[in-house]
Length: 511
Image (cartoon, rainbow, N blue to C red; front, side, top):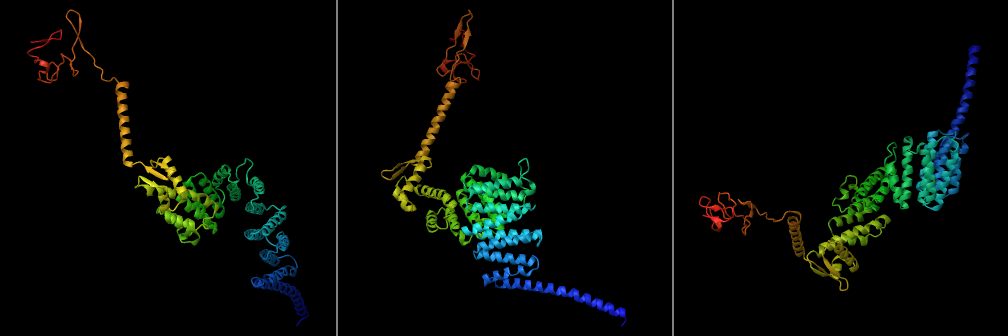
């Protein structure tokens, strides 16, 4: 081997040894970090506290902040939050935000932060958890204050507003909503089409706030404005909220048809989003169907049919079935045995209207064959209190749906016969028609006025022709060519045919 060959061999060996020394060290570190991370994941279900320690041991193994440390901190934060170690969770979340600026890409970090905020938002069941969640939002906004990440800023502020809405801090919500609207609108005050999705999120928050505070005037204006936003692609849950609030607004106005349409759209959107709120909205849809007095079963639709046998809405299903069959006893039984299932404030507020309609129909149907009965009789038959029977009959009599008189002191009711009432009404209409005809003939028209014809005497004197009792005139010619008051050829009044005689100029008979 030549000297040159020895030199090249030595040189290659040196380079080889130098390069693989570093690679081995880096690879060993990566393997240790990766093993520690996956070991922690394996025990997080069985021993979450030990898993937290393992996860927090990953970042120190990295020479500089990297993906494994970022992932490990995410896992540790979630476990700490679930174990109600809220202060530690906030501390490590703040540390994780430091990775966003350099260790991970912008899209990955934004997605991770959104997922983390969604995670804590869904688990904010108590006051301490809600307070911790609010700190998460605040730390996020502080971290991105000087960045140009408007998208993350909007999402985080919308989440803060939603948290305040759940806590019924309406003043804070109103202030935050105004701030968000300024960002999502153009200088002329119209919604920016490029931010349509965020605009709908904001409208949903504001509509919920006004629905909770019963400000229907403001709610209606916002609802109509939200439906005009066509540029965004909102999450189905957002449209479900908007439509649900719209349905409640229409219910308060007793616009049952529009309410039914909105509740159906809300149910469809919640169902698409996989939200449990779909069950509650489906109950509202069934309630509205009964208020509309519709014979259409709300579960005939392909979207609602799979939920017909769902035990969570079985009470409402049974109610609508009894309502459409006019089975008052079954309806009352369902109401009494499912008070918990019907405890929703909105249902409780509107079910009384359905019950009133149901009882009114039942009373009307029960008393139809009778002309006299007692309040106690109706009460026992329908299993409702005499006081309610009295209120229903009083309404029916005043509204003229039932003709009769109620003796409240003795608790009896006497009804007028429907046949007599129809006969009296017909006679009244007949008399009114005759009176109208009389007025037309004798007041507005000429009536039976008789004009007396006159003849000119040869001497210049005016002579009036005599008039017979039937109104015919002497000297008149009948259609057959005869003169006189009689019919053709009758010779009425002693008159002769024209060939044999007639009237002279004095109106006397001549032969």
